[in-house]
Length: 68
Image 1: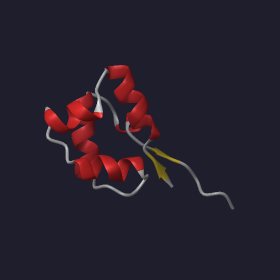
Image 2: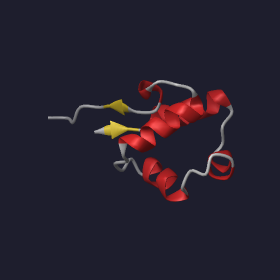
Image 3: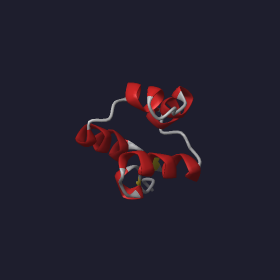
Image 4: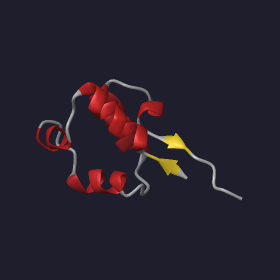
């Protein structure tokens, strides 16, 4: 499973709000909703967040193995 919990931590650390993402960087609210629901997003979206937050992919998402 891919988790986007690191994204929310990185946003807090960098002082970037969801409001700012939508209004300053024109991020689609539906993309934010997909991330909140831990749904899949494109690599383009991940790249966009890395550019906005000036961070690495690991600061946006992480892989969590499924329990057997």
